[in-house]
Image 1 (tube, rainbow, N blue to C red):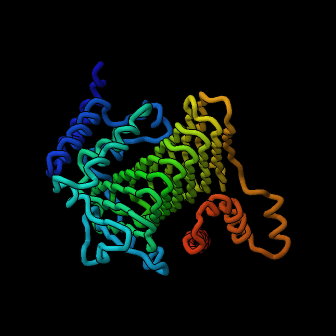
Image 2: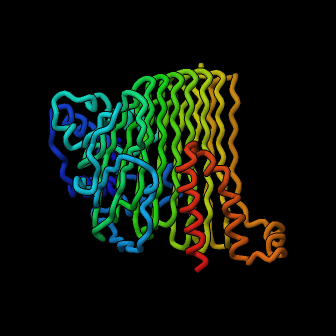
Image 3: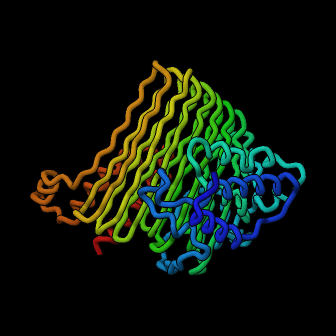
Length: 428
């Protein structure tokens, strides 16, 4: 059965407006296969089950909606932490602003270079995890990324990597349309931390494929902030081996439209996956977290912890699923999504799901929406705390559980400071 006429025409227009990069035969083959997935599935539409809460029009249109540049001066994120810095400006690698791409126990390079080589470790991963993530849910924007990504970072950790790799995205053009694809391999027993920060472009489509081998650990901290008019769709695909660890945290403040998808497969026994996110939105802000975690091994643990603070008509979305396959006994799956609405105009839309085919599991999910605790607010005000500051203190208390998901104390303190700064600016 073919695509509906409207979806087919939108897909053709989006594809025809892009140019597929060249490269080695394997890269061209992977891109052509991704293009075929795009053409078969079509661009997302509001009627699609996993897009019913978020209008995908801005991601599907041929030209990006212009986004004004945010020029306020502030201390760069993670600036007090020794790290290896990789910089992209509107999706273009900036060698002068980046550090030397070298580190102990780490092979690091650009996707643009890797896809030109006939033999490269990326060959076995590029597009592979994205392809697996298309079942059972279509993710055509991820396939579009695999087909047309112009660049990205490729990382292969062969042992403990001392310095985090910090990918910084700068936005310089009001009409930029960036498509980046990162490929990460954490070898057996190795460990790696990746930091991401910055608005990237007026419209940003990013895909990250992460293969975590047996006994390896991958940590990911992301700050999406402060350009208000930016539009971003991101996909993170992960595959976890035996006794491996995958932990990801995202803080989002501002942004007119953001959709972050996480698709993880726990394929080795005793694997651990934690996905956490916090967002603070104001006004014409729409933020969508969509998560799909598959347990396909014994004695694995997953946590999904998401909290959103919304006001002045902001909209938050959470769609989270835990799939426990037959034989995945001793699964420990936890999912919580909560929102704090600071007025009557904002919305939180949630769709938590469990699908379980094993009988010895401990899985739970919950979702709540509420307002500021008036009793606690009165208590603080009665002790001389102004209402605006008291409200911010309660917001920080609400966010505490999700921020505690960050293991590294330095990174946790930096994220906490950014959230406090956002709240303070909103008072001024």
